[in-house]
Length: 120
Image 1 (spheres, rainbow, N blue to C red):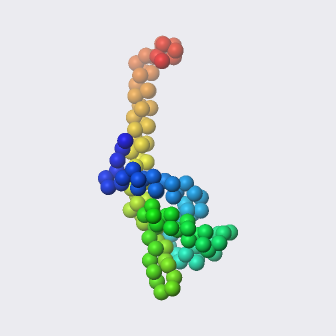
Image 2: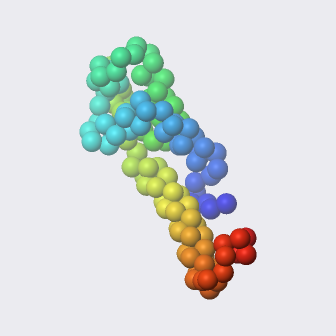
């Protein structure tokens, strides 16, 4: 298994579970653009304020956002470091995948002219 430094399997699971939901991905996208209060976030979804709070809590548990108290409001800000680490992990998987394709291409080039059934 490919491991990104200081990114445990449990943390990876939390990140990708959190990002599996379209609303949570949208919250991350919006909070990358600017910090928003939970109230501002909730105003743009056809769900209750409590439901949006739950989505934010899942993202916070995955360290994709941080919630900062500001007076009576809670300001949500994306955590680009966690997003970068998730991207780095996906980049490692892409390199593995591309390596397999490169090896397959090399194998096919070596055996050019042989029937495909002979290569399997």
